[in-house]
Amino acid sequence: MKIVTIVGARPQIIKAAAISRAVAKNPSIKEVIVHTGQHYDHNMSEVFFRELEIPKPYLNLNVGSGSHASQTARMLEGLEECVLKEKPDWLVVYGDTNSTLAAAIVAVKIETPLAHIEAGLRSGNRKMPEEHNRIITDHCSDLLLAPTETALQNLTHEGLEDRTRLVGDIMVDSLNFVQKSLQNNPIIIEELCKTSEDFVLATIHRAENTGDRSRLNSLIKALSNFDLPVVLPAHPRLVDYCNTFDIELSTGSLIIVPPLSHRELIAAAIASKSVVTDSGGLQKECFLLKIPCSTIRTETEWNETLVDGWNIIVKDLLDLQELSKRPAPKSEQPTPFGNGRTAEKIIDCLCE
Image (cartoon, rainbow, N blue to C red; front, side, top):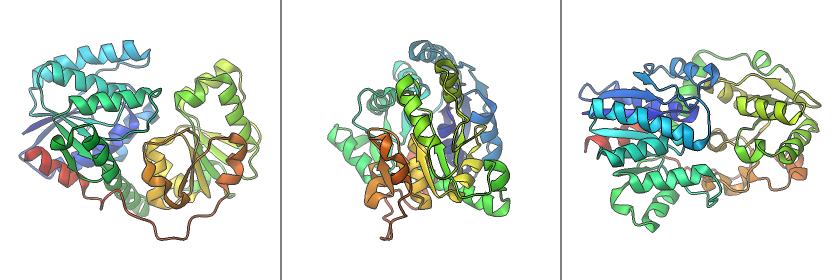
């Protein structure tokens, strides 16, 4: 069996790594990894392949940045040529990026079976490009690999139950791998985060937080007024918009560091007092690591993380500091994301 795996952004590389390691144990499966180049900065892409011990992509389309339309159009051309050449048994996609959407359209147009890992997520916010991408991809897919019961229910409600398998969340597999690597090869947090004090970890990258001058200015001001140092790995999009809007990043409590690799981000999260983020993946990782998370969005596709206040949606930035100070819940945490053997289940589903 041959599968072509499509990745384009760092969260997809992290998820795909767990599948690639499982595939490497099965000589009957050949995997071809194709990188669209949606994330092209070294710290946002290449370092992940090395850290997660998976082969470099067979092909990189190098599409780079651009409008949603131009970026997706370049992906469509490159992916169609690749899939026609490789003739895979499965085209495998992850999550909700433009890379995922482009691959889904290609699969439908040239009648290639499509498997969607992390299917069934819904935030309910139709203004998010990611929400449209994930819905369209789900309805194009031949096999929907749902991470949670909630995702399964969403797909059932949309009439897709026959194509759906509940497999658990692939990020649990990946997080287990990274935690083990950190035990074997620890990271010096003081050097990574530029502080020896207690700190809050923050990440900002989504368009709704970076693309509006007033919103971004208010967010940076709120973080800079924290009592504790706030370590902020500067995503390229954040830096670009701050430059465009003439907003000073290195101010007040903020400690600006370069983008972190996945191992580094997990190490920083574990060392932090709490996390402030707009990242879907980091919300979930904080939940799994039992770290209080404050999400600077109006909603989340990972509603399972909201139980008992492990994750809180921050609607008013004036409340951000106080919410980030809350202690970790004392109640026993549920386990909605599976047991860390999702990659094996997915391989079984593809073979089946």
